Image (cartoon, rainbow, N blue to C red):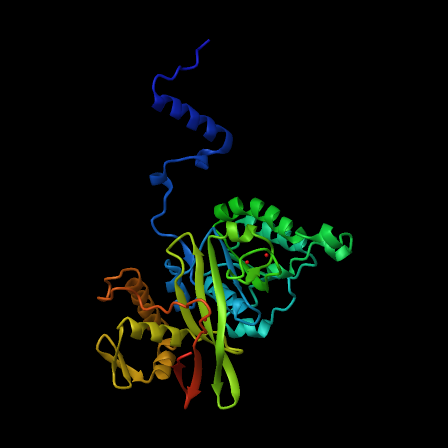
Length: 375
């Protein structure tokens, strides 16, 4: 009968420990970082270039939880739908868990979402919504799932009226905490992006300093903890054409980011019924980084004159997808290095506490920036 080998060195002891772990939990349970580390994080672009730049990696990280939060009507769902559209364009499978029962298919289609291939669930309770999410993630066959919204994930006990008063306090938070503990590992293994849309609520006499934040997100603290990326979305004043409201300025701030330095901001225009014009955002950033050259009102790229005025150039590059992608690639390359185009730092607008976001006005078809920014 052979005797078990007696470890002689620390390395032998470690090898036996690793062998034991792998025999119980599989080969991928433990490994050297150099063997498993991916130099480039896989992402799904949001399709909103200022946000992709603010994220630092070009989009939403795969295999991670992302929270998009902000006041009602700020544009949270629009941002998520743009990300779904980008995932579908790359051949990915997308699902939308509509806990609010409020998704407008026409708006989704206008934003570029292929509604024929988009999977949608409209659950009756928070438990049902999270079961659908868990099942989709564990299938490893879905690339992005959006949950809209955390505030609408009502526990079944609350729906049935079985819990009232004090017994109901924290019920949704406990539901979220339990679900996220189960989901985190499965999301990482499936390489799926899970986006939770969340709303802001006013804090009610919590004992916090009156000088601290007066707003918080719904669903407890678990989502804040488990999210790799948290994006705050705020609206500026309206974009007007005469007396008509055409849209509003959208301000985005990455308040948590485990993949890149946080607290970067970006802004774009949200046009009602149309979403966020991709071409205009690209043109604005390409001008900022001197990728598009200005000569009077004309804009050129690599010595070739494109068109007169930003609106015309935006329309031109949207009609030429290969050119648009080339410019986007250059912008992302420029923002990845402080020295890329001789800039000490990327142009960015940081919002101070209490500062209002700028507003846009439309004059003769040209957008001009006027001086005016957790439960």
